[in-house]
Length: 405
Ligand SMILES: Cc1cc2nc3c(=O)[nH]c(=O)nc-3n(C[C@H](O)[C@H](O)[C@H](O)COP(=O)(O)OP(=O)(O)OC[C@H]3O[C@@H](n4cnc5c(N)ncnc54)[C@H](O)[C@@H]3O)c2cc1C
Image (cartoon, rainbow, N blue to C red; front, side, top):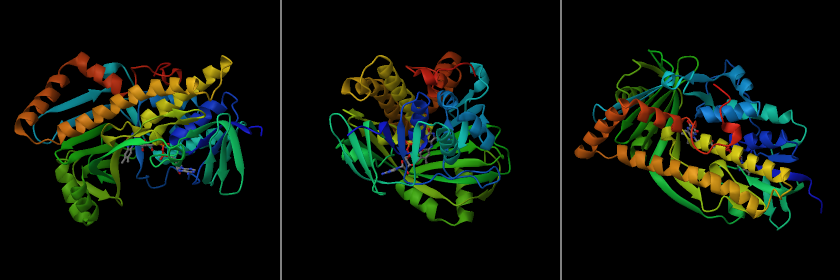
């Protein structure tokens, strides 16, 4: 049977839609299958609980797929400073965008704003079919063509199937790809918080022995908090009444932004490290959370996923331009080699940070605090660290490279 599509993407989240836009712009015939219709956000709506710290390289990718302006029109909050400190000593480190000659370190953006802005752009591209709400019932793999059966009864065929369907990927499962998995033994509690003082366009993070607490700036002066805590403590925090939660939050944050005046409903996410043993097979590739999930302490999850999308698009576009197969293992392994190294390094760093800061041993605490202060006073080392975290360094896909910020 003739393929209807070049590529089928399962999962129209932030990562799947970025890949769809990048491929649709190059006239690949793409189907995107998404289970839930994304909702738009209007400027006066309450803030969504799920937000992402978007790095400079991710901003570049989102600009290149023409979705960035739509995000700016909805709402984003740029931040120029990042302040990190240790609860068990006097160690702290402060990053300033101006030290790197940048206008910002990054942007805090609601996930729904990112997803809906990408979808708007996808819908403008004639080579993309958006199939939503639609669930996959069966996947059949073969050497030459992949077949996807949908709940609607429709059948899709393509040379290449992409799993961008998140942490519990059904595509990964159907392809019998194993994952290396371990729980961080923490949950992240998220909420929107109004404080008496403005956040000063700074991303704040305090490392407590039970896990990091971040206050991320939003455009109306409020903050999105991500409070990662050991499971028992997280369960207490989610269950306690609002008044007590506010008291605990103020104390954990050392009243850095003054009095906490209000807090929205809270939600908790179990934190699990997952890494797929393979990102690709003949005719198949995984990306984003379907391939890896990491601790949110440095806000890197979706940034890694967007780099996956940009790298995979580049590999596919190049293969076609050279007359090579877009779905062969040889082609797809280029993507896997490229991205696995970077993702593994970030995952190892996050596990290291988490372990380093959750250790209360007094010698280690002294060393940690001294280390933070030393790095804070070493301009070149600090700038190198920051450039890496912002995605300004490393083996970047073309779409992620700066054309000047
Ligand atoms: C508390 C918390 C804070 C975080 N903060 C940050 C941050 O600041 N910065 C950052 O970079 N990352 C952050 N992350 C990580 C980030 O949220 C994820 O990495 C990101 O959402 C992954 O995007 P994705 O598109 O790969 O997967 P998802 O967002 O999970 O999207 C997958 C999509 O696939 C769809 N789907 C699933 N199964 C099917 C199916 N069978 N058929 C059809 N559709 C399907 C789903 O409906 C969904 O739309 C955070 C994570 C947590 C838990």
